[in-house]
Length: 253
Image (cartoon, rainbow, N blue to C red; front, top):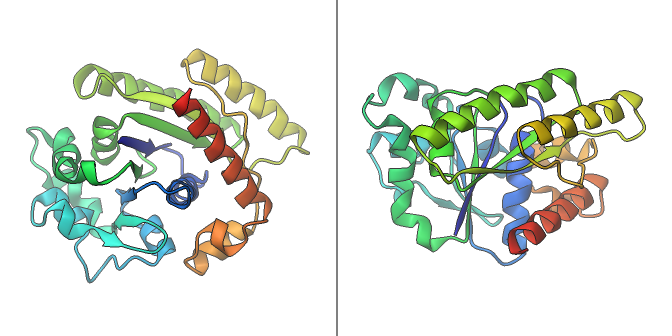
């Protein structure tokens, strides 16, 4: 069983898209997959068609009002513990003692039922993201080929170092994934080189596979269908398929 956090404090870089594609791709390969949405925006929940207002969410689970099993929704694409805007108050409502361990404590009873748990984190480095890092085995960092997205990885790395020191010494960065990539743009090529250098600096590899930009992502999310089922022959579906294969090859090697 492996827990994977998808994280980057910058928004708009394909983080939720990557979490959804990874979860769906692993499920299609026969694995038992649970996605956990700890982003108060709830985009992963909404894009998969989860009921994130009339049913228990990660918010009630973190507060101890429901068990993890009660918050799980079994969808065709994968199982999910959804989120909504109420989670935004979690930083103030969670007690100070042991607050970084809350997600781990709640998920422990159901971990053996899954092969992979994929956690979509908010675009911030607050207590929710730290909770995800505390329970995670690995962190995948999606990023666009832009200067601000690339340099923000350094701050993310500093947070990971602190989590290793105080909360979870085993967590590691599985890799950096370039998303919304245009190989024809010179600036994208330059930023790819910068991101690769930054990866070397923080001892994290840049995945060989890059995810190309595609309108198919927005279309599939609007229809609440995963990209593979919506348009499996699209460039973005092919890219995510190749990336998941690359990721799994690294896991097994």
